[in-house]
Length: 149
Image 1 (spheres, rainbow, N blue to C red):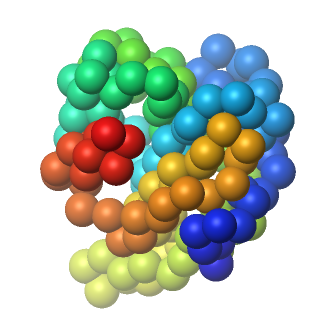
Image 2: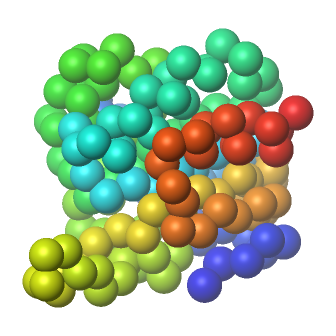
C-alpha cells in the first residue's frame, strides 16, 4: 500500500487520445491522480463532474482520472459530460495493482475484482503528499480542492 511520503510507482498509460502519459511527464507540477471503477456510472460520473466544475478554481495542479476502461470509453465519457481533464486507461490494471487498490469487491452477493476508489496527491517530484482511501465520490473533489489550498 502506498503511503504519504513515498514515491509514486513509475507508470506509462495512454490517455483518451492514445497519448502516452508517464510519471516522469508529470514532474514539475502537483498532480491529483484519482482512481475510479468505471466510466459513466452514477458515482464515477458524479465525482468526474465535480472535478470538472472545480477545475477553474484548482490552480497549479492537474487532475487526472484513471480507470480500467479503454481509451474509446474515456473519449465517450469526456464527450458526454464535457470533462476538462485527462483520463488514463489502466486496462490491464497494472497501475491499480501496483498501488494495491485492485481488490475483491462484492455487489448483490457476487464477488468480483475492481478498483477501490482512491486518490493520490503527488508533489512536483512525484512523491505522494496525501492519500484518500475508500473515497465517497460525492463531495470528494471539494476535499481535494481544500487540500490544495
